[in-house]
Length: 322
Image 1 (tube, one colour):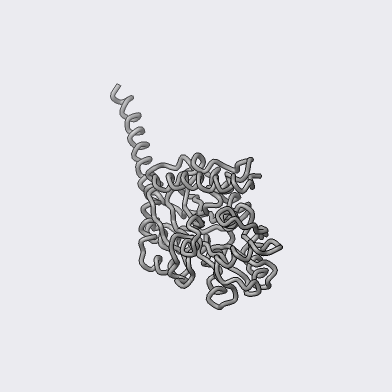
Image 2 (cartoon, helix red, strand yellow):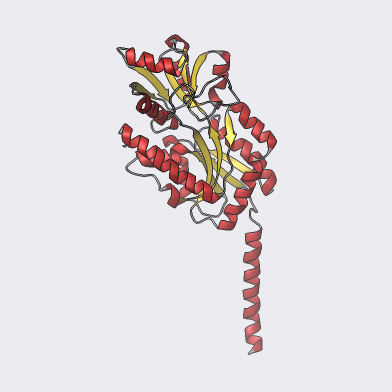
């Protein structure tokens, strides 16, 4: 009997030991982060600074893969249906996580059911800019001009359902002005038309457009946040100009597919927090108009839930659900 039992017992112990070593070894191969926007934008900027530091902590290469489309939803949907093993993650924005699902009746995914939040990464300041031809110098002047004008002023965004689009809708709701929304497929073409005076306004993440603001090629009217950005400290907030409810920060977060083991999520969260607390990363973020915001997975989950409610209300008032 002992001769019969011992081989089986040994096999069980060997299997358990192997499983334990497999769990302890994470990660034992490169980790892929799918960035749901093209290279060169704010999300890509955040991702590459993060990946460099996570690679050092995890001792495995963290690889960035850009997969844009559908305002961030395309890449997110790919990750949502990927194996929940911690080797494919998604870095995306409030637009893909809290706005797009609220706009689309055919929801591409349920954010809090289909993903395992790892951490909020960065808050990116939104700026309202005007063309030099418009003659606008402040948000207050914009509101006065829009109310007195016999034609509607136009504002460009990086696409329907994007944070800039919703920031414009929020501005309309708060100020009572009416503007024509002109969606673009990317920031470069939107900026080109702003520089040419074909649209009067552009609302966008500040990092990609800071050089145009600093050179005086366009006029920054307001930062749509609760505070000024150190990257451009002379630009007043909308709140400072009397519009206390115009707060429309963009933000980026890191998530894994739902079902990813909690131990893996904890390892990734620790690597993210170490990266975001790196003084050199903070300096790089600050120069570009971004602010690192590390959170625990539970805090990030609660934050996403609150943002779903806030942006959902704005979308309903704007009547832009598809």
